[in-house]
Length: 53
Image (tube, rainbow, N blue to C red; front, top):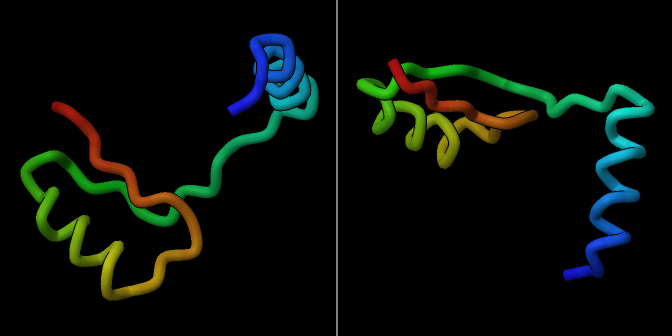
């Protein structure tokens, strides 16, 4: 945990360099259990995202 100024500096750097998270797969909410299994068993490269309707 850092200070507020460190948090703001991090956010500024992320915005400046247009950094985006790597998303491996996207699942709808009704397939959340499948998403969890995928996360646990398939070793995804990026984030596993569950979307709301």
